[in-house]
Image (cartoon, rainbow, N blue to C red; front, side, top):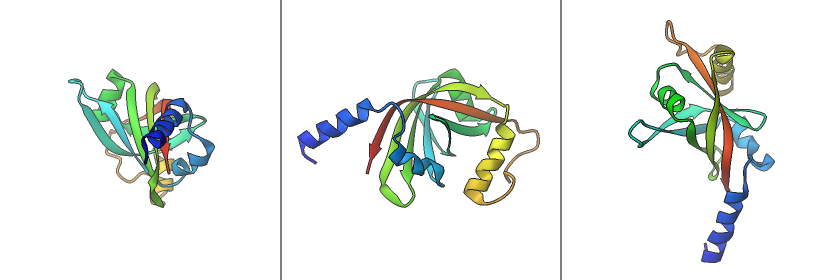
Length: 146
């Protein structure tokens, strides 16, 4: 890519605040997202996660007490990278902010994600006494490729 092409691509990326309709299919499919959170010492931490959308917001589900849970509760700034499973050169790169952390609906949501990703009715990896948590992420900046 030429310098001019890179500059045009960068300007396009900075202008996006929401996920373009032409890329939402990546999120509706069985794409895994890589969620980056910030550790207490300021270093990054990344986890592969199932991803969902609610309007223009992204939804991530985890168990209370996990590292990503602790990180997002302490610092709501996150980044996600989601690649199209049918074309690895087509992807979304999103910077966002956790705007809601709730247990309400989290159990039903993880079961819905298990249906989407695994084709099973209920999330099979639930541990006894585990509390599920749903994180609502508002997009701050969206970059696309492909």
